[in-house]
Length: 245
Ligand SMILES: *[C@@H]1O[C@H](CO)[C@@H](O)[C@H](O)[C@H]1NC(C)=O
Ligand SMILES: *[C@@H]1O[C@H](CO)[C@@H](O)[C@H](O)[C@H]1NC(C)=O
Ligand SMILES: *[C@@H]1O[C@H](CO)[C@@H](O)[C@H](O)[C@H]1NC(C)=O
Ligand SMILES: *[C@@H]1O[C@H](CO)[C@@H](O)[C@H](O)[C@H]1NC(C)=O
Ligand SMILES: *[C@@H]1O[C@H](CO)[C@@H](O)[C@H](O)[C@H]1NC(C)=O
Image 1 (cartoon, rainbow, N blue to C red):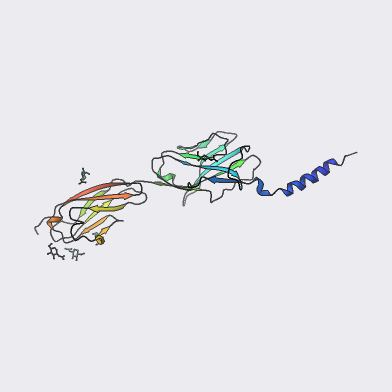
Image 2 (cartoon, protein in one colour):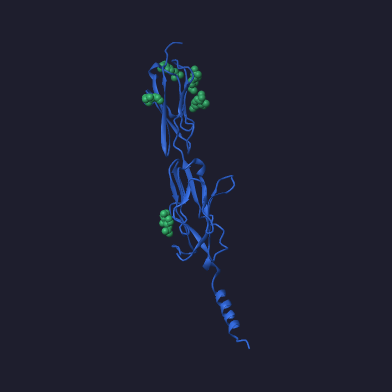
């Protein structure tokens, strides 16, 4: 004769699991405050501080074992790229210059990027799979780290367009071949701020300085400084204004 206990237990079990809200097992990724938008200079190293917790909690549950963790890089107009993958059954597969800072398995999935290159810019996010949470694969798009690799202006080149004769007009131009964000340009010269110099002849974005109605006193060295938020570089051009026709 079969005892009634098992079916009673099953009823109890079903009853209990129905009481447990499904959100109980959900995971969420955390990004350290202030680290969701990083602007870093080319050539330097950076750590993207990210870890996972149970939904609604601040700190991780150390008893949970991570089965897999994958870091992705998403760039505008490009296919999402996998930069690092950990699976408990194999070694970490990764791109060069990328590593996890804590040995796996760990709840802390912070990613180190070394010798940053311009192409490392983009949105980084990660997806984890934890024992007992096999359905957790989505990522929360608000938990991404935007990395912007900045480049100080490369040395600009200075040129003089036109013939510097008294009464004539010339344009001094200054261009840095590489800068992120784009460089802004500033010109200084022997007579620029002492004589009637109007800033409307200065184009800070394109690097032009237009000089009109030249006189011999405007002769001298003109220096252009290309600058952005991470650096500056300069060049100069010497202008000799001739008095003849
Ligand atoms: C995870 O590691 C990062 C980088 O070391 C650290 O800033 C962060 O506080 C760690 N998170 C937790 C919850 O320990
Ligand atoms: C020089 O520029 C001024 C102002 O733009 C203009 O009026 C003048 O005609 C120009 N002179 C020459 C020689 O091009
Ligand atoms: C300065 O000169 C450049 C090239 O000659 C010209 O394209 C530009 O319009 C001029 N800008 C001003 C403000 O005169
Ligand atoms: C150009 O400069 C000369 C001498 O500096 C001055 O006499 C003349 O009035 C100026 N011309 C214009 C158009 O500003
Ligand atoms: C002009 O540039 C040269 C070479 O780039 C540099 O040696 C010189 O010191 C510069 N002069 C000024 C006044 O900036």
